[in-house]
Amino acid sequence: MEYGRFNEDERDREVGNIAAGIQMESELGFGYFGDLGDLEGYLHFNLSNKFSRKGYQASLGIVILPTMQGTGIGTQLMQFGLKEMKRLGYKKIWLHVHGWNERAKKLYLRFGFKVEGVFEKDEFFDGKLTDTLSMARFL
Ligand SMILES: CC(C)(COP(=O)(O)OP(=O)(O)OC[C@H]1O[C@@H](n2cnc3c(N)ncnc32)[C@H](O)[C@@H]1OP(=O)(O)O)[C@@H](O)C(=O)NCCC(=O)NCCS
Image 1 (cartoon, helix red, strand yellow):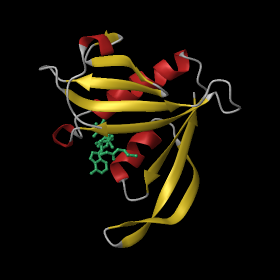
Image 2 (cartoon, protein in one colour):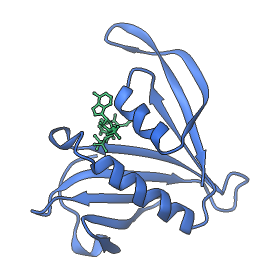
Image 3 (cartoon, helix red, strand yellow):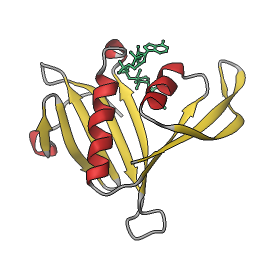
Image 4 (cartoon, protein in one colour):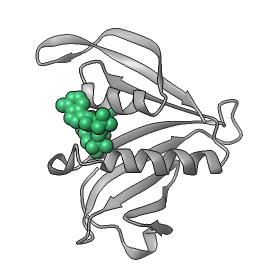
């Protein structure tokens, strides 16, 4: 994704710095906007087809502007987004994270995600084969 501004009509509902309900096809996004209105963080859920057998699940992705990482934006977006997904009736949220991504793993563990499986030697990172973790939590 690109960092930038959302149009006003793309903001369904605002709570503090968080604009909720940025809906794009099967993706539901939550943007964190700084005081100047610039997008500083983005949390999104890829929604399963409601009528499929996995209709109660969604997958999660999150990215914070590099200069703003470690300032609590990820935590705020996670708190808000998971609550919203529960309100919308979703029961299970899952994600994939690189084994080396300590900051992201720490965030997910703190929010109750558990490792469901490990894809061993899944992809090259810095010239080495690294694992990918599959994590999930129930709402
Ligand atoms: C991972 C990411 C989403 C976390 O968001 P964030 O806004 O930086 O996180 P927060 O500021 O809310 O802090 C999360 C925790 O990580 C801790 N942390 C900060 N730097 C860390 C580091 N280098 N190693 C381990 N933990 C670290 C913070 O102290 C905080 O822990 P605490 O609750 O004990 O205080 C964000 O750093 C990011 O966008 N990273 C790059 C993209 C990415 O990796 N996305 C996830 C892909 S699966």
